[in-house]
Image (cartoon, rainbow, N blue to C red; front, side, top):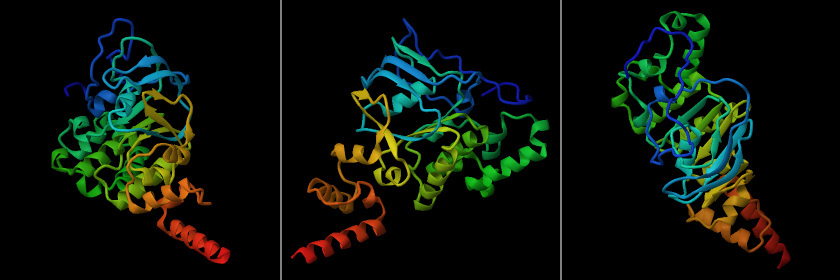
Length: 301
């Protein structure tokens, strides 16, 4: 996108209205990272009241964002999870209801990271909001080096963004928002295209960030989410207005199992076996539980 680059701290504001009476409903746009950077003032909570999303029909009676922490947004395909994030990012218009973002800065990592990239190189994608004077400050360079290392961008720094794999593009968009440090992170299928190592690294990053930021995570990867997220929102017809226990949510909704171990664990839970709802996500813990059950049954006999 065109525009002056010699400026200091980011101070852009999305001009597309979030909602309002008479607003034309339509599909969420696909903004670049540049267009998603939000100015912020004040400390109000994010509040959504009486909104029904187009297409999916998801209804939100009243939802108030927790001030911080990591929360999963789970549900079947087509239930409106991605639309929900688009709404919170200020990129989805609805016909009625209110959406008050409270001036919070929002970082939205979409399912298709290529739709959010607009610069020629990895370095320009991260550095464009900052003036050349700012970029030469020692503290700035130190923070930048930490982000480059955290997201594995050192060897990709001068590469074209269009030469990157899908997983690398996702890491780049995550790095951009990590560096800009918004109050709210919206992560839509953040592990898509990532290997086991990067799944673990992004999990650790979310855990660290959740101490002082709100992290909302849309994912179909139950084992990964259950390994570190304790609460979440179920999205199907109506969005939960308060977070629920994620283990109980997994058990309550009979989605197709992702592995034979998950299928076994659901059977054990249904039969009342004394096992934890989350223990199957760690094969070592699951094996210990099964051995303990076998020993108990053997002793009874």
